[in-house]
Image (cartoon, rainbow, N blue to C red; front, top):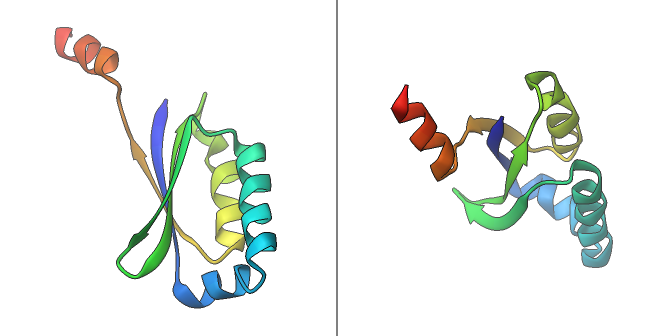
Length: 94
């Protein structure tokens, strides 16, 4: 099942991660290598450093694998089910 994962890192926690910008970027690269999202976007949301991941999870018991490393960074994490157009068409035909 495909999810949009929002990880909002408050400014204080983000400042600690990016005290050394190169090390901060490396930590995100390592995380993304481990999680293997379909896509990853970085933005600001409500004053927080925010990462939006698109992940396809074979089962919901994979959620901790995604969430725990983000929690360790001080992030607030949300999972939102998402569909592509073919999923929507299939659902509407039922």
